[in-house]
Length: 525
Image (cartoon, rainbow, N blue to C red; front, side, top):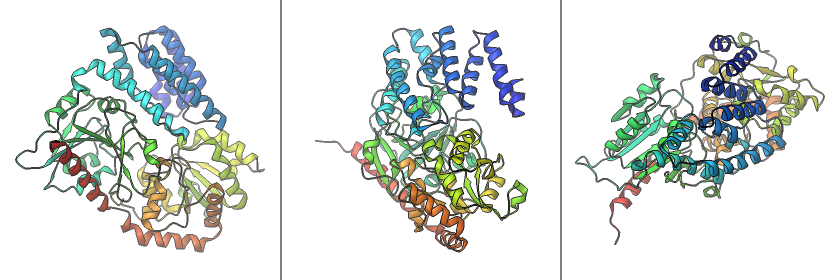
């Protein structure tokens, strides 16, 4: 029944059914879990926390509910003050959680392991703070639990010698070796790999293979598909005797975080599939980008930061179809200036809502296209009302399930508005492939500087703002000056070869790999 309501888009009925199920079957953990997650996703954070507290009291050995109770965060914040409130709550909750987590008995170890297999602290970095210390505390707890359950897999490993073929063995492990924004960029590292010096091993731990999975397999010397089996993955990685193991992302998938908490290769790295420090003592290097990182960037990482050339990845140029649809196909006006706002809702922070209203005040024909922004509607309504406007006159909320339609929306839009503090990555690269002008303002952390780096590599920097006021000015000018907008579009189109399929980062990456292995293999006197 719950799945039927979900398919029909009836969230209130989903919540009502889950509440009743949890009440009638108080010992059935799956109902409590689903209810907590559904409440969080619907923006009802306080009720989600209250339900976690109830579930935890009913099932005190269920560590998943303990984690929820202490660390659950909103997906979308209503006000800037709410960010501060929940951050302080998280800090206290994490401290209490660490103090209360016991791993003395086999049962305790087992329960804690089961708990961390279902959750990560994914939403914390979206508060736009330097999270290195909190990430380190959370990651050390994760590592402690994994070490208690798998003590044989946390000890340092010596660098294995090179085999007869003299190739360095590099492993990549992810639950997302399919069409997914956090790993699409990785195909370039593999496709352009120097096969004379490197042997590529891929470990796909998810189970939704698609044509991109086939690409990963083709670009690998050895490809293992081991879905949802942590111990089997560990055993296979260790048997392959890698020199370097790379996690394209850490923090989005619970099992990947567990794997990264172990020592499965002598050198372990992560990269910007999830552009936040892992905090883990088992991850040695963070593979980033020289164009994305600010000068003081090392302060944001527990790992040693490696700044690879340019944007750090060789992103394959996306195939962009011809414009097959019109605005009327999406109930959009031909006369409107369409501003595309395509980021996930948790990237939009409340302190920046006024920007949309201010653009609308100065560009009367503005229409903002939100593709995943339903949770933002109450906030936007307030922001527009403050300048005497109605948000429903300017904001459209579309659901675009098909990739073709998503690309059509890019092709039909006039301007792409990047999110402040957490920039678009994959979405910005696809917008550039559609020749769509991007308004961006680089943030304090690398995660807020993706689009900035893309435009700099293109050499089209006119739409990079210095601050929020400049961001508004650029967005307004693009809306009111179609000739300037067209000039930006033409320059983006002419410069795309500088951005896509970049080989300079591959040379930098492989030089790093060789240096690390050479240093570990060379005996010190």
